[in-house]
Length: 422
Image 1 (cartoon, rainbow, N blue to C red):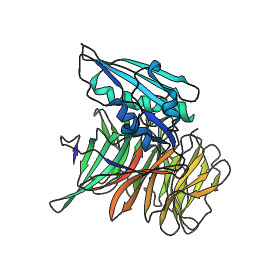
Image 2: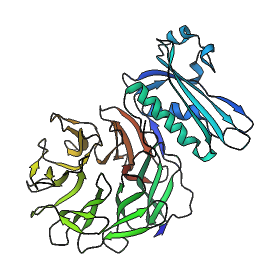
Image 3: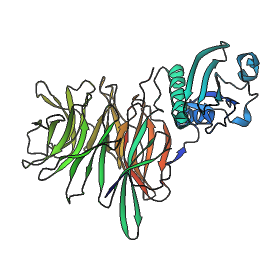
Image 4: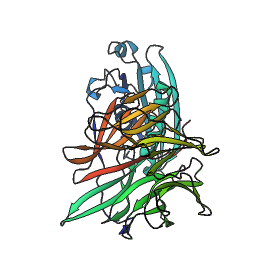
């Protein structure tokens, strides 16, 4: 096992679906580049790519642009209306003599012939240009949909590679678009269930480095790594409370697999469930007052919830014989789960009105994880015998597949915002 291993990691390869029904037409004009320093990132290309992979937008191909205006005065609106373009995105990047960069972005409403968004960034280091492009994408997404974007975020996932007749597992973290992958842990033993702390500074996950399951909490700045659950039996399924002060997890130290809550300051444990059945995979409600979890007390896995103030338990899922791996959306609206129906697929249950619908159509889907804006989910799936990741919107729009060329990728976890959205 090794931490932060010095190795070269390939970015996740993202395959974007060919066309999404009712995607909004939009144009991203190549940004004007000025200054004395060369621009190392194509900001407009990153924005266009982000909007396309969201599944909500259909950006015009660059070779179809009727012109490349650099200011509002150069816009001929009729040329864009004939192409059914509703909004135009333009901007500029200036390389300064001190090596820093100034950037701005504008969103133009073609029908109203006016600017609806304008924003500037000043004194940006070279290493942060991609992050600013993701921030711009988030602002554009919010302006045009009313929902904050989720581009300025990260993914955690586990890659599996076979080398020299041995299996190698790596816990990695990348930007949401698969760029800048960073190895967090390498091991010849399985790594499972990564879970982000609410502030994005730590990951909890399960390893088998001692020969059995342990729950580990690791600071991503490399300052600290600690095994927090090394009890006899099962130690698994960590889930952070919304305030980051507690960790829900599954332990079988008393015999049965039950849900416990660990105080992360004192390490004190509170036993939440007390049943002869296997109860695992906890997930918190956004207010931290309810835990949802998987239990087989009815003979097959189903989703239950517990009010942490009253200890009242209620069954939540009733569709089909198998529902497991619950995950609550950050806005509290949806409960995602793995649902068995001609294979294992990802399903959503609307907590507000009880509606239940299946999102995916694959043979084996697992490990759903919501984006922080609650608009999309990433999940693991098996395609052509290889583990890959896929992203689907809560409306059922499949937008992208994420894979690696030399192995498999599984156990995704979508991280929180790097900076809070406006």
